[in-house]
Length: 199
Image (tube, rainbow, N blue to C red; front, side):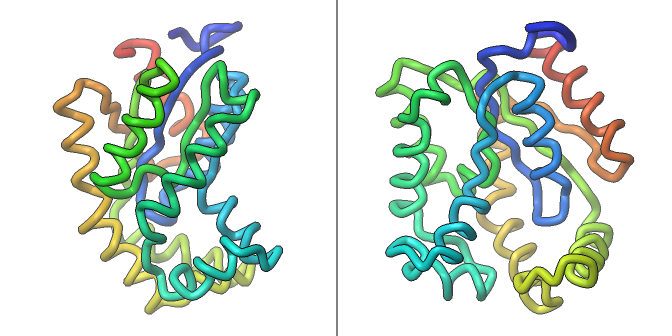
């Protein structure tokens, strides 16, 4: 992969990062760079809740408490989304996998499609910065899930369930770690540089 022209086309990436790490912003930028869909499971779930769909009713209370939606439900959502025609050439996954069980599910989904990941990008930000960013976002956007107690629970869940994924992917040679405690453009440049140099 490179950092210009059509170099990013066909990329298959997973983004890891705690709530407030800027993962959503970077996922959108990387998807545009790679000309692939940005698949945000959080956005898909929030949309389902807003629409009052069957999925939305199942996950509403779980999300409001800052907990993770169960692995089987998330795997079904992602399997269906990755089967869509626009994901055939690649994707940026934001919000899945979040547990080691979900890693196994994703491996199974990709293996069945004869595909594999190009890289897993972990965006690291100090916890105090994450908390402040989310409190600021609550004030600006009125996000219901950014109350302090919910923020603390989301970060606790991330530490216990999702952080181990970084080590798993490091052992597989897929992990690229970037410092997310910087201006957005600088973070994007670091990710593209990591992908170009190491992928």
